[in-house]
Length: 204
Image (tube, rainbow, N blue to C red; front, side, top):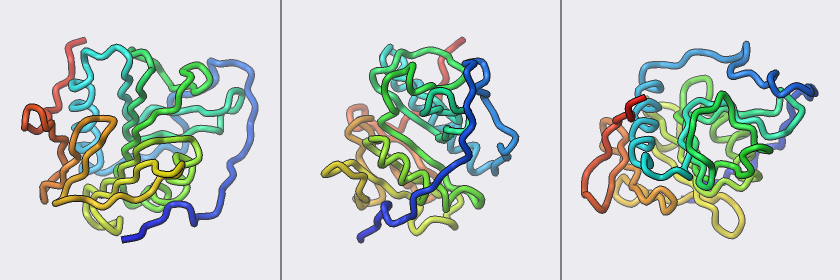
């Protein structure tokens, strides 16, 4: 199966310059709600990955956090459903500023919804490709938007390229986990413990 992410036209966004770092907001007026399917899967992925990397101080897991990629511009941002950044100090932050963090998140999950799926497979895929994302996973929690419920892309020959599933699962080399389509839901599987990860958030 040959699925390409690079055939979409390049896109532009309005350009607005701001000199004050305090003006990079956590949310924007265009933010909209999502379905419970979407929310539950994001909560699971975040909780499972946060717990899995709990003892690694150089891995940041974030959910629905604005990622600003151009200093001085409040409009240059994306909001990945889940992003995992290796080489970034663990800890709370309001937003992710690329020029301060010094590294673009290497693993991105997007959970498709009726209003986002075209962007997830089009503009966002193109942007993540150009930004150096190593692994990109698209999940259709409602199983009615994407060509496949679980779609995986991995950087090969300097581009994100589609990688087919093996028996309803795909292995993530960076996470060292399987992403599994169970038929009813989507779960992360640890090959070492031979168990699915539980979404357990650490104590405050």
